[in-house]
Image 1 (cartoon, helix red, strand yellow):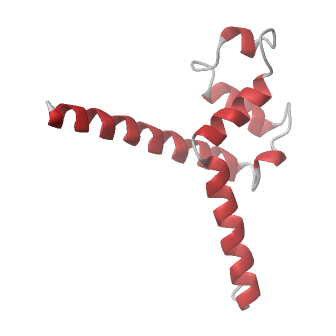
Image 2: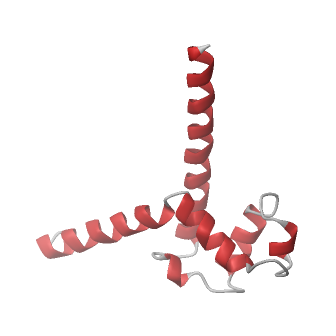
Length: 101
């Protein structure tokens, strides 16, 4: 029983890791370094809307029950994407300070 629970947790964690990697690829391909750079109507926004189309509630998608851009940002924060982007920026600043870039 314990093994089954552990497998289920690892399976869910693996799904979140794969999802985060896919989203990071979308952000990187559009040159996004901060979540504030995602603009409504941009190519990155459209790609994220397509990616989250099955997951986003219909009312939010149609902007009746909420704003789709806010929902996307909240979802990215839930996945920890904001922390990953911040860590990359901090590392780049560190390398610049050390004269490595």
